[in-house]
Length: 356
Image (cartoon, rainbow, N blue to C red; front, side, top):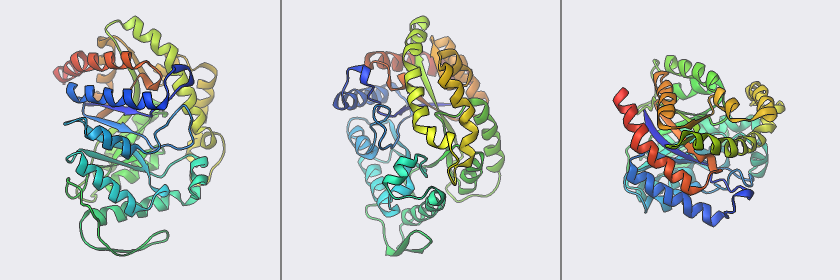
C-alpha cells in the first residue's frame, strides 16, 4: 500500500498563518516528503470556501512543487470538469506533466458544491453528462490525433493537443467517487477511484467490493484499477501528544468540511440524490465531532507508530491501494506536520512493507 499526501490548503483563522505562509509551509513539506519517499502529493480544487480550502488553482501550486521535487508524484484531486473546457484541462495537464518530468496523476470529477456550480454556470443535473463528455474528449486529445467531436455540451472540429504530456498516452486517470454508482462508472471507464474524505469507512468498504467486482469487465486501455482513500492522520512517537493535538485540531477540519457539503447532504439536489444518505453522519458529527467519533467512522488515525501501522494495515487488508494522508488535516502547525511525516516514513512505511 502506498502512502500519499493530501492537501486542502486550509487557512484557519485561529492558526496565525496567512495564505502566503500556508503556501510556503506546504511547499517545504512537499520537499521533505520527496526526500522521505512518499508516493504522491494531491491537491484539491475548491472555490468560495474561506478557511477550509484556499486551493483554487492547484495546477499552479503543483507546477511550483514540480520545480522543488524530483520523485514525488503530483496529483490533482480533482479537476471538476464541468467548470472547465476539456481542451483547457488537457492543455494544462499536459503542461504540468512536462514541467514535472512525467509525474502527474490526474483526478477528475463533476464537482458537488451548488455555490461553485452557480459561479461557473453549471446546472447540477447536467454535471455528470458534462463530466462524461469531457473524459471522452480528454482521452481522444491525449491520443495525439486531431479530434472532432459533437456532443450535447461540447463541439470540437479538428483540434490537436499542444503540448503533449510526457506520459503516454496520458497520465494515470482517477475519478472522484461518492455514490456507489460512481464506483461502477469508474470501473467501466477504466479509472482509479479517489474516495473520501467525508464518507465513513463502513460505506467505502462496501463500495470497494463493488468496484473490484465491476473491474472484471472490459474497460478502455490503459486502465487504472487502484482505489485510494483520504484519511486525516497524525502520527508521532508520543502517541498521547498525537491524540491530544488531533482532538484539538481535527474537529475543526471536519466541521468545516461538513459545512461545505451541507447543501447536498441536507437538500434534494437534482443529480445528487444519493448524497442525502450521508446526512445522518453529518448530524452525528455536528453533535459530537470528537476524536473517538471520527475514529469510529474511519475518518482519522491518530497515535504512535504502532497504532497507525495497525490502522493502515487494516485498510490494506481490505483492499485499499493508496492512502492519501491529510497529515494534520490543515489545522496542525507545520513543525508538527513535518515531524509526523518523518515518523510515518521512518517507522510506519517500513513496518507496512515488512508485514505485507
